[in-house]
Length: 516
Image 1 (cartoon, rainbow, N blue to C red):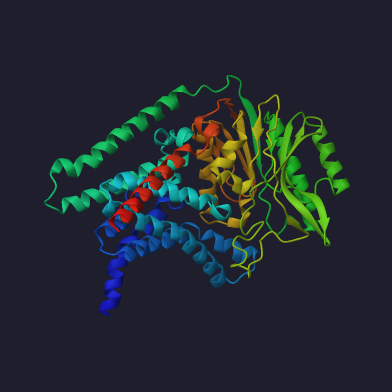
Image 2: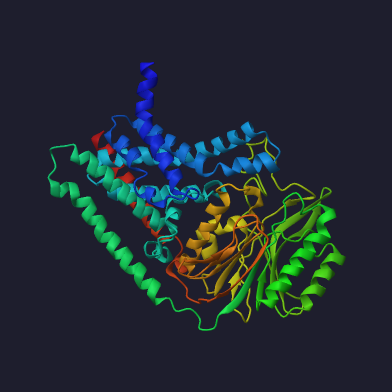
């Protein structure tokens, strides 16, 4: 019993950190908690005497953190992958444990850097976190979900630095304050430090945050959108996931989209956006339904963007498909097509297939998905735009690559019906806030069951829908042709952090060799 109590006391701080991190994200979206969420973990790591504990404490925090913010994956696997709930939750636990390894490494390296160098934790901790957050988003195809910086999506003056640093810069600031608070608590319990030394981290942070906010307010006041607005409508069809490929509902679904599009035209829209995979047929392969859609669009003086599965090949009795965004110009003329590059784990493919061999992808049917290869930018008189599909909006570097040579706005289409009424759709939506700021482009988002909406180039959410409602949302957007530092150079800030991390590691290795 004493052993159990000891373990409970030892691991309460990291569990509490994981719980606070969960509370910081939508939902419940108590974002200010992100400024103190890591304090229990950092205090426990810095105050402990064991290297193993530092890693395990970080791992525990990570498991709680990622399991609680990504539980919606179990909902998708259970409801659409037809896996029992316990097994579905076990899959999420495995993924959370994998991602928790990054937080475990963070805990271990924080302790190592603090004990073996004279560099304070409020300087080493933020760069370590950013580096590991980046690697979590790119290794093994990457899963850039639950980035700490996303919690601050409402704090517009603070997050404007994303056009230089990406979302990673906001994560850096959060960890910096957490580390400064943990450092203060430890020093406050010691008589070896003067009050000035105890408060020094906060003084340095105050200077940094003042500069960040000054830059943020400057950017908010200096955004010069195009004088002429573009009127855009997003169609939220609210089509049930199990009805989309049922032949009984094909006519009903198409009629619904056509009626809602006519409403959008009546509202003055020049660009209408349907969601990801909105067509209940294979565009181009089903000749009759394809011609019917083109005939409908010919009557409208609009640009139409819609999601569709396209047949690319036929192998071993199955179609090879791409998840694509098609663009038609006024008069039913084909203008452009973009084939999705980064596919959804568990939706279009199963990550870590050798380990998770017992799971099938959620999108089952007549074909297998293959990835696209071209970064397509659509050129129109309304402005130039790319159309990242669904999960792709979560990848800062990928979205930035579309706009490296210019562009005016972002169109993103998705189908979040898989997530149900979980926190998944809310977390997915707020990522677009940072893509808007990073590239200084307004975002137009059409989601089958929500959340659809509009975000301006400062990251302000100007309109949004609710989940599982059928609605046409029409707004004016102000295009922005600016090319940002982030669009042009990508995650330079992250690379600087990783160079700093590597430099400390190399220096520690040299010291160890000399001592031997």
